Amino acid sequence: MHIFYTPDIASANYTLNEEESKHCSKVLRLGIGDVVQLIDGRGGFYEAEISAVSKKHVDLKVVSSQQEYGKRNHHLHIAVAPTKNIDRLEWFLEKATEIGIDEITPIICDRSERRIVKEERLDKVITSAVKQSLTAYHPLLNPAMALTDFLKKETSANKLIAHCMDGDKAYAKDLVQPHQSYVVLIGPEGDFTAAELELALQTGYKPVTLGQTRLRTETAALYACFELNYINR
Amino acid sequence: MHIFYTPDIASANYTLNEEESKHCSKVLRLGIGDVVQLIDGRGGFYEAEISAVSKKHVDLKVVSSQQEYGKRNHHLHIAVAPTKNIDRLEWFLEKATEIGIDEITPIICDRSERRIVKEERLDKVITSAVKQSLTAYHPLLNPAMALTDFLKKETSANKLIAHCMDGDKAYAKDLVQPHQSYVVLIGPEGDFTAAELELALQTGYKPVTLGQTRLRTETAALYACFELNYINR
Image (cartoon, rainbow over all chains, first blue to last red; front, side, top):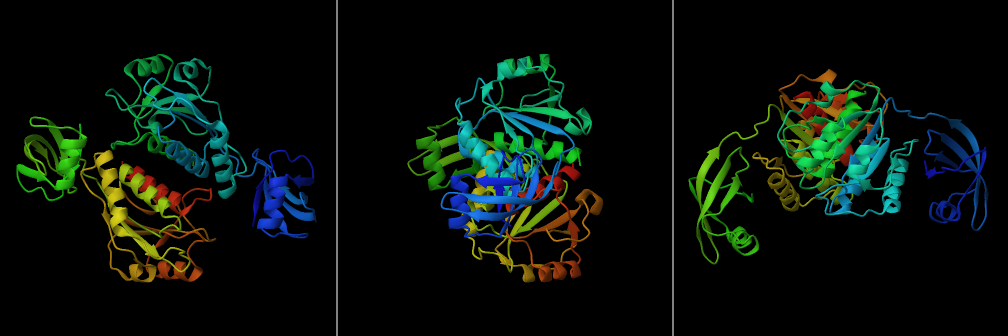
């Protein structure tokens, strides 16, 4: 069935915006009486029937709704340095949304070759994955910020940092309990600097290992996403 | 340090082929006395010193070598339907090589929109990931084959199938023991047909669940790769 993302749905009657309306009536060729699925990104999942179709508008009438659809049992926040090739970050966002993530923050580090990201474009990648994977909760993409500023933020979450330098590291399952909040730091190509790592450790981040192999930035971020979801199954 | 893939290395002296030689001397600007790393794809990891540089050849002298470098403690074979957009399969091959996989077979299913794959190109993606992630074992990419033929192959591996249809499913950790051989079937966009699933079940494949969310073909394949590696840590 066709899915539409309707973050502003507020009642049993909803009108698709012009772009979605044209997609619905012209591209999908749907008409009065056809049923579509709606997700609001806040856990709401709806089935709605097309009640009217005009040139620029498609009116929908909700016929059934569920709240907290596919509610997650933990909160996972991954703060990852944007990759030099932005496709790799976009790929991570798509896959993490499919597997399960709640919050993402692009962090700019000393060795970040990319220091600017277009959040609007990245958010579209997430929304598209939300629809594709029928995830009623839309992951939150925060504006990019400097790692040093990110480390200053107060949080009650379990703090983990994945780095490639020597030193004691443990598996996530041995560092955290299930059903909690987690924030995981993933560095840029070339890793965090020793000074950045030291600062993170002083702020309470614990070094985590993601296995024995050398992973690219976006692979490490997805690996962390896999593992925290696995621990919470 | 720079890494070269040298599957045919047989002694302490090795000469890079013309393409690699030009890359080494012209692009990387390496010269006599410089040290490079070599992996043979069969577990051999070497450090070698450049002993001579000519127009088309770079001669290397091995100064140290390790066998069974990063040897894996299990054998993971993923048989996956090639995605309609081949980039997605290539992405899976790159990521699976980074995380850890031994064998891949593209399987052509009833609902496969893509029925032909260029193994040579896909193998280059794997080789590139092998070098990037410093994996001394090169995963084996088998020629594409029909699922029905694949199911006829004799194997002593644990057989798992991931599908989206209803029915009893279990987590991989509850279906297999560590340190064994595994083969996991991942279907095409649109899933296996009921007849294909039935045939796989008759052949001894056990239905496995990859979590609660709806995953794309290549995401499901990588998820299975992550999980079997996790079970074997």
